[in-house]
Length: 75
Image (cartoon, rainbow, N blue to C red; front, side, top):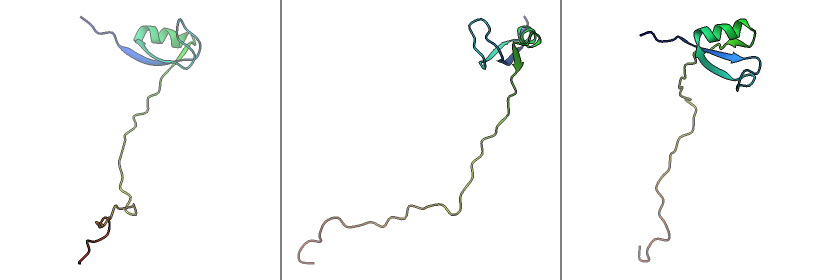
């Protein structure tokens, strides 16, 4: 049993129930036919890597405890 190869394409014209600029996944043969007919282009996926960074001059949460209300009489 073989798996059909899948390709991501971006439509340049309306096709079936899809609209212009829709990105769809379809079988490799269908995708190649749509590209050859000028109805689609291969979707260029950019592999974006999300990174985190630390801002050394960032804010800090330095809160000193505060007394609520007035101190009791007698102190």
